[in-house]
Length: 333
Length: 265
Image 1 (cartoon, rainbow over the protein chains, first blue to last red):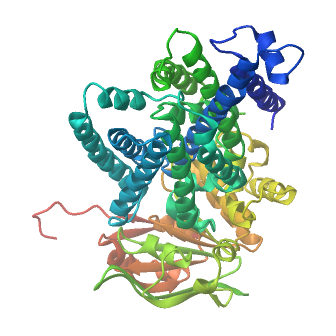
Image 2 (cartoon, rainbow over the protein chains, first blue to last red):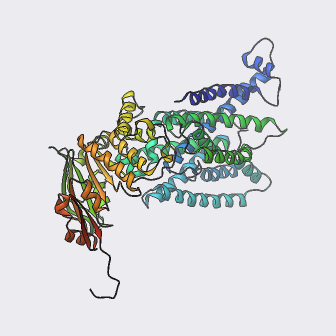
Image 3 (tube, helix red, strand yellow):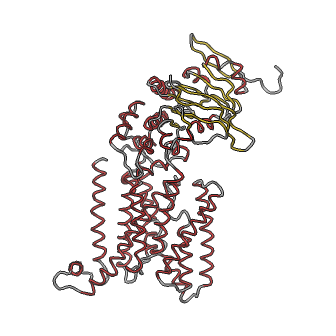
């Protein structure tokens, strides 16, 4: 690795804990950083309420943001390779629309936070399961799965529309709409456990197999001739990637763009080899969502939904990246 | 001479009752260059896929160093037989080195990273095709001829003794075709075997040790290029009349101009 690129990796490694610390110190309650740090470390006289807030509310929320960012970015990177298409993102297999339907159903039935998460998670898996089932009828080629994803997404969009149509417009409908915008307002230790567990296992899995993923960007026949067990590896990566996305959507709602923009950013920054792009996407994804969520809960008197913020910033970011990409393509590294 | 790769009575059909290959038998020894010629749809690519162990023939079998290819693990198979595909545009801009490293995929442990040995093998493979100094260049930014050489290097990095090439000269200008064939000859002189599918009888005349002609999925003849590529055999293969040109010891064939339709000969 050239020294410039390894320097970039070190910057990322340094930025992540700094922003994580900043994210739990900054907030509308107690804007003074020094007193927040004192409260965190129990130094001298400190504000007990602030300490409780930091440890009980901001810390799990920050961890959820980090996991969601890392999950969406890593599975986005992997999915773009599996489908051999750089425009694919984490929503490709209908995960998000399935989760949205599940969450809306839970809100309609007035289930609690854990119930909502479970329903969103379950229906995300149901949607992907249906896509794979449809795909199997036609040989499971990547293009078939993409078409299947579009079909199943459309189905769940329609079902979601039906739920919104029958929902009580004064109480249930706003709750559904708000959930669909994405956000981490309701994250507490009690509800964040499954996300942390699934993220840890899934991300470690992709870090461990990242050297084998490069060959999956080749046509299937060619990868098979290299001695790669394409179908098994692809199925495993699809399954684990889906779990990561489903767990993220279940907790954070529909957060777009991270799974599309961050993989591109990572590749533009460090190169397309998964041995580097996976850890960098992980870091940049976690960093982005931590920062965006901190912005979302601090800049305005009331919270900005995270999904809106990622859209507002994601579109121009992608545009800039794309122009840069067109200019630098083909230069030796 | 040792028999590296052997096909025994291969029959393969995509649709039942319409076999693409019928009782194809051939063998290839180390240091040998075998060309497979045939019209479009005559089964060349299917044959290479079967020889690479990627398709399971309906009848017959492929032997690698005497062992049935179906009995080998994916990694063992890739370490013996490599498929060198036609050049194509990859999705991501990998460096040359990364592309060749993909040839080591089957040698990595489940959670393994490439070792020092893997890196050395990759550089050796690139040197063997004359691209030793270019390992960090980006694969999407090099010429078609260089890409074909990189794909050959990837086959070498697999450790394969036998390389199956699908129309390596397609899309290349004469100079780059020559670069590729020179690399093939040099590697053959060091003991590698090549099975090359081609649409160019003249390449077979100039480059091959042996030629096999495929007509409707059957090997109609196989042997020394001058014995196999007769005007009658070429007409039977391509349904076009050819004429033979001589220049000293070298020979070439060109298709004859066809009579305009409606006129009698």
